Image (tube, rainbow, N blue to C red; front, side):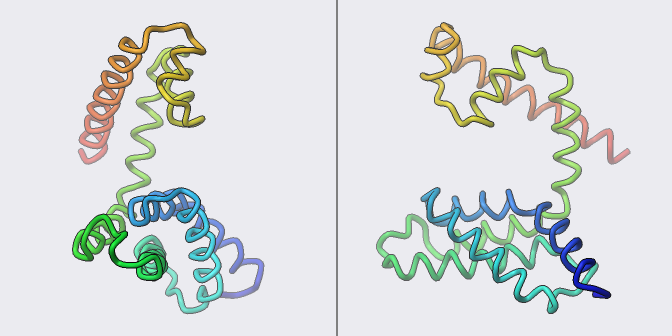
Length: 175
């Protein structure tokens, strides 16, 4: 790295590109949002302190997930093995998949962005309530006055439609 400013800028760019995936991975590993948030912060601190060891141009996401994996396993061991919901092999498979997906993520995000643009404002509003604000479907039903069953059907249908749209976008992108 040439200067402290350039180092900071590069780290920030790389870390913001993977921070959500690190947090999601940690949630899967520890099954506790507060613990995952704390572990994500610890992971970020370690990544920053070891950033001089990072080889520019290599897969930052894979490196970051490997650090997060170590933090999660350390946390789980401290909480006693009996509280681990899955065996070590499962967690290793999740970590491997998360690392592999780091290169695919920008294409998926762009595909999702294009698919979301096609939705109506009402559809976007409901999806934001559910997935951005993390409101329960019951709460959305109370806020909007829509029947609970119709909202479950709506979200199921929207997730399928978005998944199909994303797959079509990715296929078009590969051509």
